Amino acid sequence: MSAFPNVRFIKSANAPDQFVPETGGEVAIAGRSNSGKSSAINLITQRHGLARTSKTPGQTQLVNFFELEPERRLVDLPGYGFAKVPRELQDHWGRLLTIYFANRATLKGLFIVMDIRRPLGEKDEQMMALVSARGLPVHLLLTKADKVSRNEALPTLRRICAATEGRATAQLFSALTKEGVDEARKRLRSMFSAPRGIISPIL
Image (cartoon, rainbow, N blue to C red; front, top):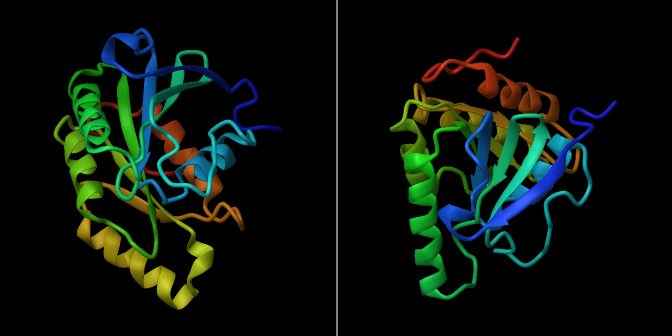
């Protein structure tokens, strides 16, 4: 049975007044434009093609709202990093996300997707800081874990956990082998139910 059998796309927004009404709760997901964010969304929700995947970085250019269950949403944010888009558009995304993180009352937490071969860059740290400032949990998906050996993956995970201790949780993830998908789903669900500022353990 699908983890989220009734998941559906709600709408895309290019300005704060286009966001969906602030009811229920939502978890945002962000990442560099080549980190595998769309593939992670599709695997976690078990809905092929829910989030657009492309070999061209930067395809998520709007704030996309998906309903996982009634009153529970996943919010796909524009990718950052190497997207080949005009500077003015990048600046617009920056302002849009700053407003979203500062004012969105329904935000429950943030997933940050990062390629395990290029983890925890400056932009990742900035995203983490925006959410941590509000006392909300952050979870890091170290994607493309199949691209490195276990002797590389596990030390990288330990290093990231040490560097973000008290600020975030982290895990290995692969859309190809499906490593970590159950853990990611459990973490997602825990964010919806956790009190503000509490990083819930995965049971």
